[in-house]
Amino acid sequence: MKRAAGWLVLVIGGLALAAFGVFQFSPEVQDRLFAIGARAQLDRQSQLATSDDAIRVLLCGTSSPLPLRKAAKACTLVVAGGRLFIVDIGPEASENLALWRVSTPKVEAVFLTHFHSDHIGELGELNMQGWAQGRRLPLDVYGPVGVAEVVAGFNAAYSFDRQYRNAHHGNGTGLLPLSAGEMTAHVADFVQPGDVPTGRTQVIYDKGGVTVTAIETDHRPVSPAFAYRFAYKGRSVVISGDTVLNDGLVDATKGADVLVSEAQAHHLQDIMAREASSVGQETLASVLKDTSRYHINPVEAAQLANRAGVRELVYTHMAPPLVFGLLKTPWLRGVAKERPEGVTIGHDGMVITIPVDGSAITFSALEG
Image: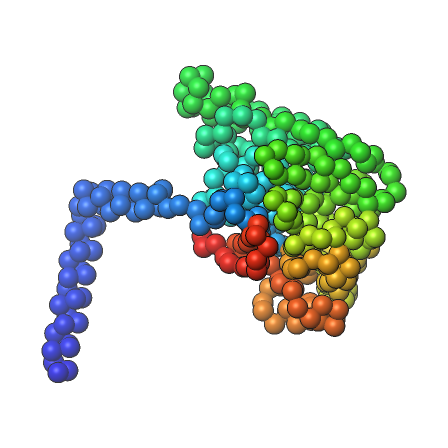
């Protein structure tokens, strides 16, 4: 029996060696195998459902500005009424969307909560990718006062790129029309810079049964800053943006099915600041310490969810970075006392499905 197994191993090894040799010295075999692999990848469909039986929320970036190898910066995608919307598009997020085969030409609009770099860093890339893959209209970008300048800046920064790609691919024959390569800004000016936040709201998008309400938040000294509430067929999700706990946000979140909230564990952030100072990184230490003044913490986010009566609270934009699983325990310290159930730590690729019939909210994950 052992002798037969040994011969089998030798035969298999010999066949593998022969196949390797054929591959190394046969261009035809190399090209054929490459074509098979390329077709398999190109034909791979997104796992993200877009049917109109639910609101679906995809976390496409869940980290804070501090680097985390497995997580992009702030980005949340909402599917409602068969259409795709994105809230914030931080660095690395467009790569996530590409790896998950999310169809960026189908993104109907982008909603920016505010203009910190970790929330807008890949706006230009998202726009370019959607255009280069077939979008035929300018991308709509909504946000607070200042969004026109941000959009104009990205349009200017990518102006040469648009011209190059138009010349590369058809040179004006319609393959990559320049008119579709730019973005169009839509300013929600019901809040002005310097206004004291009171939780004012305004519906800024209403098409095909999907409404998006901008909610004034308190992220001072950033002003204005928004959260967004997406509603479709009686179901809704609120995406907090960056904020501190405040009554206006509680009121505007009431009755939502899901709250996707940023959160920073201030006690851990303070430890990071102290340790940064101990190794001579005083600027970083000061920045880390300051952030506690303008971010909600996990316990406060749980209180917000409770006061608003939401069914599920999902954390995103988490700081400090949860670089390994055991950190979840100190990061969530005190949360269970406030909200024993209905709390989930988000991760890149998490999909939250909110059925329009009011049945159970479910969680799944996309694979890259």
